[in-house]
Length: 173
Image 1 (cartoon, rainbow, N blue to C red):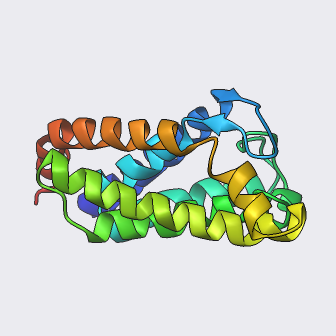
Image 2: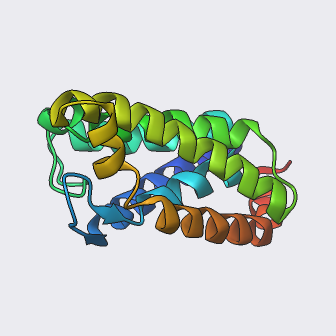
């Protein structure tokens, strides 16, 4: 029972961190620059696929019920709006990132970049219907973010390698 409570608590911590990451933003277009992806990567890298995805599912559900946890507020409209694909991509990204077990910074980075691709694919799929096509969605929803997102993936990889032993000890793995 203690282990279940600890797992749920860790998932909630990463949901909260993703909320904080959303509030640290630079509004440059329909898709603002935030620190959310840093915490999405960390949730998958540190918690694993299922628990990492759960943390992001909780984050998205908090926003859908109306809490202002997304970069521009909260409510169901954000899930069906231009950035909805990115939000759903966070859940899938944490899962994919967690599937690819990263024991070194290099392996964590590969996992994080794979997860980042998932966010981009899902985000662009939805955004393209709002901005008039795939090329425009790539220009607005990917190109301005690639460098920053790669830097966040590198940072998450470094942090994850340092924190993994602590999390593993907590979870008794």
